Image (cartoon, rainbow, N blue to C red; front, side, top):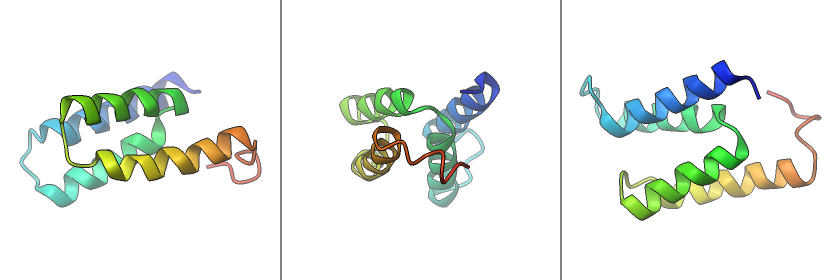
Length: 84
């Protein structure tokens, strides 16, 4: 995993959590999904756990779907066919 891509993903997630520019919920969700897609699978699990346990945002249950799909791609090794 490219460290710059990972760092950008974490930055987008932190921006979504903090919302320093007060852009609204739509941009929070957009930043969060983009950032969540950029980080690696195990980092996604850590972010999900932090979001659910600490109650940072209300996106925790939606993250289960993202992690499930990413897990299928990871464990079935289909990611090479649909690389992004």
